[in-house]
Image (cartoon, rainbow, N blue to C red; front, top):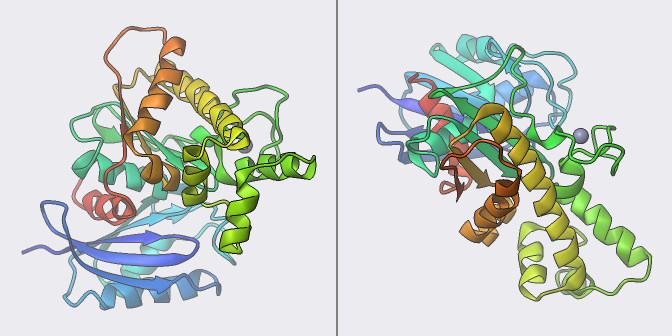
Length: 308
Ligand SMILES: [Zn+2]
Protein backbone atom coordinates (compact mmCIF):
# COMPACT_ATOMS: atom_id res chain seq x y z
CA UNK A 1 0.00 0.00 0.00
CA UNK A 2 1.24 3.46 -0.87
CA UNK A 3 1.57 5.89 2.05
CA UNK A 4 1.19 9.59 1.29
CA UNK A 5 2.32 12.36 3.60
CA UNK A 6 1.41 16.03 3.47
CA UNK A 7 3.46 18.80 5.07
CA UNK A 8 2.18 22.26 5.88
CA UNK A 9 5.21 24.56 6.25
CA UNK A 10 4.16 27.78 7.93
CA UNK A 11 5.95 30.69 9.55
CA UNK A 12 5.15 29.31 13.02
CA UNK A 13 4.76 25.54 12.71
CA UNK A 14 5.66 22.61 10.52
CA UNK A 15 2.81 20.08 10.47
CA UNK A 16 3.24 16.68 8.83
CA UNK A 17 0.46 14.13 8.38
CA UNK A 18 -0.24 10.79 6.82
CA UNK A 19 -3.33 11.12 4.63
CA UNK A 20 -5.19 8.07 3.33
CA UNK A 21 -6.79 7.48 -0.08
CA UNK A 22 -10.07 8.99 1.19
CA UNK A 23 -8.22 12.19 2.24
CA UNK A 24 -8.55 11.43 5.94
CA UNK A 25 -5.67 12.34 8.26
CA UNK A 26 -4.32 9.16 9.90
CA UNK A 27 -1.32 10.45 11.83
CA UNK A 28 0.06 13.85 12.64
CA UNK A 29 3.30 15.43 13.89
CA UNK A 30 4.03 19.06 14.64
CA UNK A 31 7.21 21.08 15.24
CA UNK A 32 8.02 24.73 15.66
CA UNK A 33 9.40 26.23 12.46
CA UNK A 34 13.09 26.89 13.15
CA UNK A 35 14.48 30.34 12.35
CA UNK A 36 17.90 29.03 11.27
CA UNK A 37 17.30 29.16 7.52
CA UNK A 38 16.52 26.50 4.88
CA UNK A 39 18.76 23.70 6.24
CA UNK A 40 17.19 23.94 9.69
CA UNK A 41 13.69 23.91 8.18
CA UNK A 42 14.58 20.83 6.10
CA UNK A 43 15.79 19.13 9.30
CA UNK A 44 12.47 19.96 10.99
CA UNK A 45 10.42 18.61 8.08
CA UNK A 46 12.48 15.41 7.97
CA UNK A 47 12.04 15.01 11.74
CA UNK A 48 8.28 15.64 11.60
CA UNK A 49 7.84 13.12 8.75
CA UNK A 50 9.96 10.65 10.75
CA UNK A 51 7.61 11.02 13.72
CA UNK A 52 4.60 9.86 11.71
CA UNK A 53 5.26 6.28 12.70
CA UNK A 54 5.45 4.58 9.30
CA UNK A 55 7.63 4.90 6.22
CA UNK A 56 6.13 7.14 3.55
CA UNK A 57 6.27 6.72 -0.24
CA UNK A 58 5.64 10.29 -1.35
CA UNK A 59 5.59 13.68 0.34
CA UNK A 60 3.78 16.85 -0.67
CA UNK A 61 4.69 20.20 0.88
CA UNK A 62 2.86 23.52 0.98
CA UNK A 63 5.35 26.39 1.36
CA UNK A 64 4.61 30.04 2.18
CA UNK A 65 5.67 31.68 -1.06
CA UNK A 66 5.61 31.33 -4.84
CA UNK A 67 6.99 27.96 -5.97
CA UNK A 68 8.24 27.07 -9.42
CA UNK A 69 9.60 23.62 -10.32
CA UNK A 70 9.99 22.67 -6.65
CA UNK A 71 11.96 25.83 -5.89
CA UNK A 72 10.55 28.26 -3.31
CA UNK A 73 11.29 31.61 -4.95
CA UNK A 74 10.63 33.88 -1.97
CA UNK A 75 9.36 33.24 1.56
CA UNK A 76 9.15 36.46 3.58
CA UNK A 77 7.69 34.61 6.61
CA UNK A 78 10.65 32.23 6.92
CA UNK A 79 13.79 33.62 8.56
CA UNK A 80 16.93 33.39 6.47
CA UNK A 81 15.17 32.38 3.22
CA UNK A 82 16.73 35.24 1.31
CA UNK A 83 17.48 33.30 -1.88
CA UNK A 84 15.38 30.84 -3.89
CA UNK A 85 15.42 27.47 -2.08
CA UNK A 86 15.27 24.17 -4.05
CA UNK A 87 13.13 22.62 -1.33
CA UNK A 88 11.85 19.63 -3.32
CA UNK A 89 15.38 18.54 -4.28
CA UNK A 90 16.70 19.09 -0.74
CA UNK A 91 13.91 16.98 0.77
CA UNK A 92 14.14 14.24 -1.86
CA UNK A 93 17.85 13.99 -1.02
CA UNK A 94 17.09 13.55 2.67
CA UNK A 95 13.92 11.46 2.54
CA UNK A 96 14.75 9.31 -0.49
CA UNK A 97 11.19 9.56 -1.86
CA UNK A 98 9.39 11.74 -4.38
CA UNK A 99 8.67 15.20 -2.95
CA UNK A 100 6.30 17.74 -4.49
CA UNK A 101 6.38 21.36 -3.29
CA UNK A 102 3.76 23.97 -4.07
CA UNK A 103 2.51 27.32 -2.79
CA UNK A 104 0.53 27.00 0.45
CA UNK A 105 -2.52 28.91 -0.78
CA UNK A 106 -2.73 26.63 -3.82
CA UNK A 107 -2.13 23.55 -1.67
CA UNK A 108 -4.86 24.57 0.79
CA UNK A 109 -7.28 25.06 -2.08
CA UNK A 110 -6.39 21.64 -3.50
CA UNK A 111 -7.30 20.21 -0.08
CA UNK A 112 -10.71 21.88 -0.20
CA UNK A 113 -11.08 20.85 -3.84
CA UNK A 114 -10.50 17.13 -3.26
CA UNK A 115 -12.12 16.80 0.17
CA UNK A 116 -13.93 19.97 1.25
CA UNK A 117 -15.97 22.92 0.05
CA UNK A 118 -14.47 22.86 -3.44
CA UNK A 119 -15.53 19.31 -4.35
CA UNK A 120 -17.00 19.03 -7.82
CA UNK A 121 -15.93 22.48 -8.99
CA UNK A 122 -13.86 22.83 -12.16
CA UNK A 123 -13.10 26.57 -11.97
CA UNK A 124 -12.40 27.44 -8.39
CA UNK A 125 -10.97 30.38 -6.46
CA UNK A 126 -9.77 30.04 -2.87
CA UNK A 127 -9.81 33.20 -0.74
CA UNK A 128 -7.75 32.87 2.44
CA UNK A 129 -8.39 35.49 5.07
CA UNK A 130 -5.57 35.80 7.59
CA UNK A 131 -3.01 38.43 8.50
CA UNK A 132 -3.09 39.14 4.80
CA UNK A 133 -5.37 37.93 2.01
CA UNK A 134 -4.21 34.92 0.02
CA UNK A 135 -5.63 33.25 -3.04
CA UNK A 136 -5.39 30.02 -4.99
CA UNK A 137 -6.84 28.78 -8.27
CA UNK A 138 -8.06 25.57 -9.84
CA UNK A 139 -8.87 26.12 -13.51
CA UNK A 140 -10.22 23.56 -15.98
CA UNK A 141 -9.97 20.95 -13.26
CA UNK A 142 -6.28 21.53 -12.51
CA UNK A 143 -4.37 23.61 -9.97
CA UNK A 144 -3.20 26.75 -11.77
CA UNK A 145 0.18 28.27 -10.92
CA UNK A 146 0.97 30.63 -13.77
CA UNK A 147 4.36 31.26 -15.40
CA UNK A 148 6.40 31.74 -12.20
CA UNK A 149 4.26 30.08 -9.54
CA UNK A 150 2.69 33.42 -8.68
CA UNK A 151 -0.91 32.94 -9.86
CA UNK A 152 -3.75 33.65 -7.45
CA UNK A 153 -2.30 36.70 -5.68
CA UNK A 154 -5.79 37.90 -4.94
CA UNK A 155 -4.66 40.00 -1.95
CA UNK A 156 -2.86 42.46 -4.18
CA UNK A 157 -5.62 43.03 -6.70
CA UNK A 158 -6.17 46.76 -6.67
CA UNK A 159 -9.71 47.67 -5.65
CA UNK A 160 -9.08 51.37 -4.95
CA UNK A 161 -6.45 53.11 -7.09
CA UNK A 162 -4.69 55.69 -4.91
CA UNK A 163 -6.28 54.12 -1.81
CA UNK A 164 -4.87 52.87 1.47
CA UNK A 165 -1.19 51.81 1.48
CA UNK A 166 -0.77 48.02 1.53
CA UNK A 167 1.96 46.00 3.26
CA UNK A 168 3.43 45.43 -0.22
CA UNK A 169 4.00 49.18 -0.62
CA UNK A 170 1.36 49.67 -3.31
CA UNK A 171 -1.94 51.45 -2.78
CA UNK A 172 -5.49 50.18 -2.78
CA UNK A 173 -4.84 46.40 -2.62
CA UNK A 174 -7.75 44.37 -1.24
CA UNK A 175 -5.38 43.21 1.53
CA UNK A 176 -5.08 46.83 2.70
CA UNK A 177 -8.81 46.65 3.54
CA UNK A 178 -9.49 43.01 4.30
CA UNK A 179 -6.26 41.64 5.78
CA UNK A 180 -6.38 41.29 9.56
CA UNK A 181 -3.21 43.35 10.03
CA UNK A 182 -4.67 46.18 7.94
CA UNK A 183 -8.04 46.04 9.71
CA UNK A 184 -6.21 46.23 13.03
CA UNK A 185 -4.32 49.32 11.85
CA UNK A 186 -7.64 50.96 10.94
CA UNK A 187 -9.07 50.18 14.37
CA UNK A 188 -5.93 51.54 16.08
CA UNK A 189 -6.11 54.75 14.05
CA UNK A 190 -9.77 55.25 15.00
CA UNK A 191 -9.05 54.57 18.68
CA UNK A 192 -6.08 56.97 18.61
CA UNK A 193 -8.47 59.57 17.18
CA UNK A 194 -10.65 59.15 20.27
CA UNK A 195 -13.28 56.70 19.05
CA UNK A 196 -14.78 54.33 21.63
CA UNK A 197 -15.09 50.67 20.68
CA UNK A 198 -15.70 47.28 22.28
CA UNK A 199 -12.17 46.33 21.15
CA UNK A 200 -10.78 48.28 24.12
CA UNK A 201 -12.82 46.14 26.52
CA UNK A 202 -11.87 42.92 24.71
CA UNK A 203 -8.19 43.87 24.75
CA UNK A 204 -8.29 44.72 28.46
CA UNK A 205 -10.00 41.41 29.22
CA UNK A 206 -7.51 39.25 27.28
CA UNK A 207 -4.45 41.37 28.07
CA UNK A 208 -3.49 41.06 24.39
CA UNK A 209 -3.35 43.73 21.76
CA UNK A 210 -3.76 41.40 18.78
CA UNK A 211 -7.21 41.45 17.27
CA UNK A 212 -7.59 37.77 16.52
CA UNK A 213 -10.35 36.25 14.40
CA UNK A 214 -12.13 35.34 17.65
CA UNK A 215 -11.99 38.95 18.87
CA UNK A 216 -13.39 40.16 15.54
CA UNK A 217 -16.22 37.65 15.70
CA UNK A 218 -17.09 38.81 19.20
CA UNK A 219 -16.96 42.52 18.33
CA UNK A 220 -19.16 41.95 15.25
CA UNK A 221 -21.63 39.84 17.24
CA UNK A 222 -21.84 42.68 19.78
CA UNK A 223 -22.75 45.07 16.96
CA UNK A 224 -19.80 47.36 17.68
CA UNK A 225 -20.11 50.26 15.20
CA UNK A 226 -16.37 50.55 14.48
CA UNK A 227 -15.95 46.79 14.00
CA UNK A 228 -19.01 46.76 11.73
CA UNK A 229 -17.74 49.70 9.70
CA UNK A 230 -14.24 48.30 9.19
CA UNK A 231 -15.58 44.83 8.41
CA UNK A 232 -18.20 46.14 5.96
CA UNK A 233 -15.40 47.89 4.14
CA UNK A 234 -13.39 44.64 4.10
CA UNK A 235 -16.32 42.72 2.62
CA UNK A 236 -16.87 45.43 -0.01
CA UNK A 237 -13.19 45.27 -0.99
CA UNK A 238 -13.32 41.47 -1.17
CA UNK A 239 -16.49 41.71 -3.26
CA UNK A 240 -14.76 43.96 -5.78
CA UNK A 241 -11.65 41.76 -5.96
CA UNK A 242 -13.51 38.47 -6.25
CA UNK A 243 -15.88 39.93 -8.87
CA UNK A 244 -12.83 40.95 -10.90
CA UNK A 245 -11.41 37.44 -10.58
CA UNK A 246 -14.72 35.82 -11.56
CA UNK A 247 -15.10 38.13 -14.56
CA UNK A 248 -11.55 37.42 -15.68
CA UNK A 249 -11.64 33.66 -15.23
CA UNK A 250 -15.35 32.71 -15.38
CA UNK A 251 -15.20 30.76 -12.12
CA UNK A 252 -18.00 28.50 -10.89
CA UNK A 253 -17.08 28.39 -7.21
CA UNK A 254 -15.39 30.51 -4.57
CA UNK A 255 -14.22 28.97 -1.28
CA UNK A 256 -13.57 31.36 1.59
CA UNK A 257 -11.26 30.14 4.36
CA UNK A 258 -8.94 31.31 7.12
CA UNK A 259 -9.44 32.19 10.77
CA UNK A 260 -12.24 34.72 10.42
CA UNK A 261 -14.08 32.45 7.95
CA UNK A 262 -13.90 29.61 10.48
CA UNK A 263 -15.38 31.90 13.14
CA UNK A 264 -18.15 33.43 11.03
CA UNK A 265 -18.94 30.37 8.91
CA UNK A 266 -21.16 30.19 5.82
CA UNK A 267 -22.81 33.60 6.52
CA UNK A 268 -19.46 35.23 5.65
CA UNK A 269 -19.27 33.36 2.33
CA UNK A 270 -22.88 34.42 1.65
CA UNK A 271 -22.04 38.05 2.39
CA UNK A 272 -19.06 37.98 0.06
CA UNK A 273 -21.26 36.35 -2.59
CA UNK A 274 -23.79 39.19 -2.22
CA UNK A 275 -20.98 41.73 -2.57
CA UNK A 276 -19.67 39.97 -5.69
CA UNK A 277 -22.90 39.41 -7.65
CA UNK A 278 -23.63 43.03 -8.69
CA UNK A 279 -20.15 43.13 -10.24
CA UNK A 280 -20.55 40.08 -12.45
CA UNK A 281 -20.85 40.41 -16.22
CA UNK A 282 -21.65 36.93 -17.51
CA UNK A 283 -24.66 35.07 -16.06
CA UNK A 284 -24.03 31.67 -14.56
CA UNK A 285 -24.40 29.74 -11.36
CA UNK A 286 -21.55 30.70 -9.05
CA UNK A 287 -21.48 29.32 -5.55
CA UNK A 288 -19.75 30.78 -2.51
CA UNK A 289 -18.84 28.39 0.28
CA UNK A 290 -16.96 28.59 3.51
CA UNK A 291 -13.97 26.22 3.76
CA UNK A 292 -14.64 22.93 5.54
CA UNK A 293 -11.25 21.50 6.46
CA UNK A 294 -9.76 24.19 8.70
CA UNK A 295 -6.01 23.84 9.23
CA UNK A 296 -6.09 20.34 7.72
CA UNK A 297 -6.61 21.71 4.20
CA UNK A 298 -2.81 22.19 3.94
CA UNK A 299 -1.72 18.65 4.75
CA UNK A 300 -4.64 17.07 2.84
CA UNK A 301 -3.93 19.20 -0.25
CA UNK A 302 -0.19 18.57 -0.04
CA UNK A 303 -0.71 14.81 0.14
CA UNK A 304 -3.22 14.98 -2.74
CA UNK A 305 -0.68 16.78 -4.93
CA UNK A 306 1.64 13.78 -4.81
CA UNK A 307 -1.11 11.79 -6.54
CA UNK A 308 -1.88 14.11 -9.45
ZN1 LIG B 1 -0.57 44.87 -1.77
